[in-house]
Length: 333
Image (cartoon, rainbow, N blue to C red; front, side):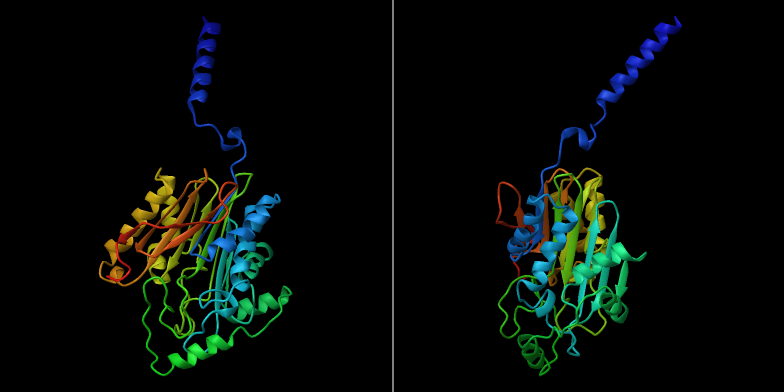
């Protein structure tokens, strides 16, 4: 009788184990993929994809993609060509995160070309997550980064033109769209990568709002606001007016919604609805955009207003640029 009872117990345990979801490793390597915000995400994705294709990690890939955005292009929203604050200073923000919880960030960093790489150094070389201002610059110099002036002639001209009125009002999709000489229609770059080993990483980098108050920091360098990644679930990043992401711990919220079983697009939509419910009047004039990818490589996005696009790159499609659905049908409400 004892042997029969043990046999039955063993059989039940084996049946129960068979009914459980299989571990990710049992299903084979995850399919590599990289996604990022806005139209300049296409060439940034290429830089990241080259790393993944050569067998590099998701972390190396997002750093490479973000570095391209910081110096491989020249626009008013990211890196060396970013527009200054109202006092004429160009300050940069960035964060980077691994799916195992490792993360680093810098905010209000001046005179350093690659804030994303400084953020990675913060993660790997210090016990901290976030360094700001003069301390972040001091750390970057100690790590071997070379200082240089980042205020370009174009940014200087736009700033001096802005000083004539000093009018400050963020616009839908890009705060700088109506500024002299700037016709680009994009903002902060946020990037998520899934490596062939199934591990994820993310990066987010920006020069922040043009002509902001000196010392203003948005969501991009704040883990959980502008970026959040979890190997057990997926990752999310955000773009738009950072104050709204800060008020809602937005990227963390999107990941937690995916943890509850929502697909990436649905998680982004629910998070956007949270923003609208909290500040319905403000949501009519401010853009907020979310981009997410789960551990299976499923991608989704949602925005407050039309105009948000995101780039997807994997083995099948290298230069895909997709338009996000939105709460409001028009970019001008």
